[in-house]
Image 1 (cartoon, rainbow, N blue to C red):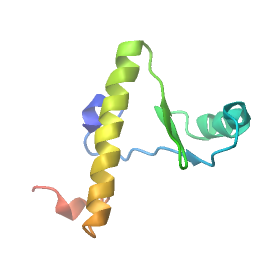
Image 2: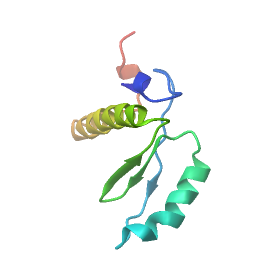
Image 3: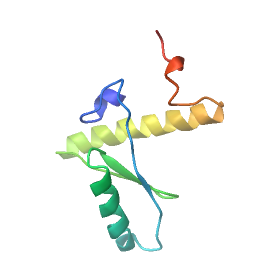
Length: 94
């Protein structure tokens, strides 16, 4: 699913910044902007205890990236529940 993220290959590290949630959506603007400036290659920003915002060059690309990210996030959670480190490259097939 890494291949479905624009500019990210199988062996790359994908970083999705996490910002704190706020009582009102419009209050996210400053921290969202900061995260997007600090991580310009990230296709999304995760909002703690809320979800994530994703974008792309078109609605189709944004949809594809959202689907890929959803799968990757779910996989990371399941691996964590099993006590596996999702960033441990020794777990991959060689």
